[in-house]
Length: 308
Image 1 (cartoon, rainbow, N blue to C red):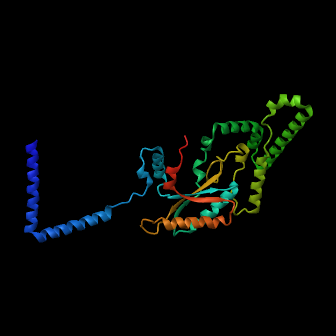
Image 2 (cartoon, rainbow, N blue to C red):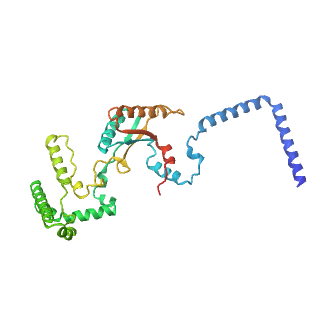
Image 3 (tube, one colour):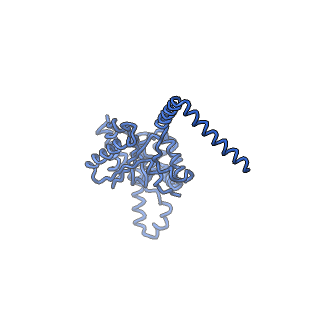
């Protein structure tokens, strides 16, 4: 082992002296080679050097939220930011999202793509798969309660027959209510299980009249919304045709945005993000009761808590 070390040490020293003698013998050649190698090193560094600015690089890539981020990034890799809208009333929030979406689409200098709604046409015929077991039981009960109305309407479809059937159901409900009131608490308590769920919800009638009014007052701009959703599942938004991005039982609305960087600099996203914040403030002047804020998608996901 000692002999091998002495051999390697001597070989290294002889190699260094050989390079030194070669450099002294051919100085200009050595200088040109050094300059060429330095130029190649500068070129390679300038074309391949990258800055990893993501905080995800500082944590384990096996973390659950990192894996979720990678899964979401596969589907939404071009969407850099999202806007969170928190209205006091859901209708005001929808109007805020519509106004903000129109402004963002008009700003083609800073925004290249906006997603404030999704097309629900692809869910037609499949929405029952999205209902919870409780909603399915409610739907079955209301179908049973409205069996006579639906049978009459299927035999003679039309608005006139629908109103006649609704009138009959309201009359039945009124007679049932008066009968149980006159008979007293004892009789009503015994008949309650039989009559429970048989009263007609006037929400459907109100929605029907609202659709009729909108169709008559503005037929050119009228967009049909089926009132049957309020008839069968008045407390569920699964059958909604609007397609807004919501969460927390409609407490929050979201707008996904893909910005358009001005250049390829290190702070290329700063001008578009500032423009997005300016758009939000401008829309909030007309909606002072609506709170909204901008969040970068790549920074927000690792900070979110995982709901188990």
